[in-house]
Image 1 (tube, one colour):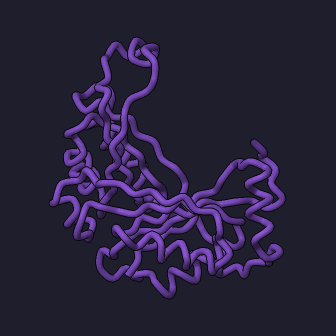
Image 2: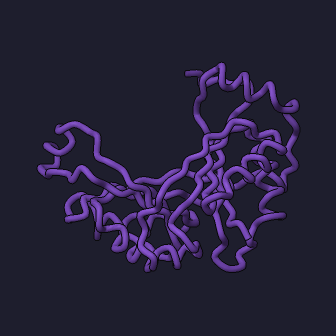
Length: 228
């Protein structure tokens, strides 16, 4: 792995309705973002949660795209104007970017070979870290309870991903608990001013010492918008 790419890189995460992934890949490729992984999954949220997210189905296309930071910043700035909901309603998808701290040198070289030289960004186009992505790993069956707690602290919705506990026994021995193998991860995008109180409430009500056996963490998000 290389921590010293010629230009800093960022990842765009796009959560879309099923069948919209290919079109969004073409859109991003036209913006010089050419490295994509497309994931197809079945959502595990209840119908009530899907209604809360403003989505008609639990089936989603998830894109993980990587490009130079300056191009990612410019692209999200442009797309938020042309495709963003601008706060009108719940939106039909979600797009946000995350900074990368490292990438393999060959992958970086291939990405950079397909892009124009680095450009100077206008100050109005530079993203500010106003949001955080909260990730909550809990036992199956507790996602609705987690979202109820998060909603009371200001969350508007979340995405549920099926997962499996794959650590060794040392972690469990430290806490004196036995963790359920089948897990679910709740991803919630929130403004930074709501992050701490929301994480504290989730940890208090659904943390490791509860039946949910929840683990909570957060990541900084550069820019995020809902699709109109």
